[in-house]
Length: 200
Length: 402
Image (tube, rainbow over all chains, first blue to last red; front, side, top):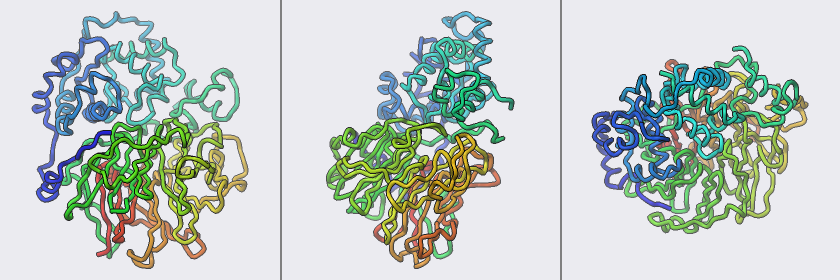
């Protein structure tokens, strides 16, 4: 078990006596912290690394929550647990503001993405309506609050993530996604991943 | 919206009827799809995002909060993201559990300032927090842990005693977070929520209030048919167990209501999934609601009535002695937000609830449809003041008489 002060006693006392200015997340500062992230997530936040997600254009609340869950060891991805170890809340919020402000790629998406498959995309589109993905992730799949942007995400990462939710290897900030994917076949997940990855 | 095939499937399964797709009707229905038919509710309702980073004190909107004349409310502690259920140690330490962030906090008063320590991290929704005989018991979804002599080692609590196997609680994540409290009989009480919105389930395993000997032996069902209780306490005089309960989602904006339950005898059936009071749930087979114990009070639709505590003694005046303070975290599954406050259930001499009155308000901006906090639990301090945990702000407020 790890023990530490959330805030040192002195810092807390000072904070109570002299409230700091309202801390608005600082995207420019976040950019200066993002250099180590670029190797995997892409210099512009659009990943060209297999199974590593693009972060550009993600909702800042989603990014913030996931970084905290990595830091706390609640979401287990060893590379990210290590990268986020000991990160401050301020750094988390500034990094989130930075990536949220970056534009997600438009066509062509990624050189190593699979070819477009019209039949797969059509099946994925029908599944998305049936399972109401656009209710929480919004009709354009741009995401909101704790719910990520799906449009243009790497297809391999989308499939991997849905498989993890379905197998209960991952939960979000609630269990909605585990339930939403209940009963879908492997082919269904692949069709959905393809359809969502080619949205813009 | 016309029903989709998956919605029809959910409907069939919810009715326990096999119609067009017998194989599918055998399978559990996705929780999000259960019992959604016919309510007419906006389909885009979704849980509110939590905040898991520190909210600076100047952003905690304590100035918006309102209490009755003669009381005041102040910010007592902050910097405890996701703060939920509280327990008070013998030396005055306030232990605070959480859900998503997986932490347990210990808050102490040092020279009039509060110090927040994180004493455990990485747990799966450690919402159950109970203190007795110097020991802190924490119930996470999949674990029961106990730190003996915790207040003497807050800076280095060390490894807890692992009591998970002794208690043998279900580990389902959906509604699997626990509330915990030691009763006046020395037993450890907790809840077992139902792992769905509304569904068929084993009524001896889920939707229960249960108690155990402190070592995890001697499980006893205190009440069944209670869908998801995340708050209970024992009447200071009668020692009866009283509990809040969360009604199900997607049945309508105004049905069912969250409820307050009085448990007169161990083992009583309070009706879930069949009835909430006199309301028979159309998603399940019909049973006469008169078969079941009736709620002591209705607490409003989708208000998320969670932590509740009897106020002991006359520190708040005679009007509040042995009355129940209830934190209502606030709705998500309702087109117009409800809850986001602390109410008082007023009891008469026979233990009948005569009124449910607002006590702490101001978290909700009804016109804008926005909220400034989510109260989840209460604790009475030795000096008679009342602490309120705000999960959204990671803050603890203190209410006292002026």
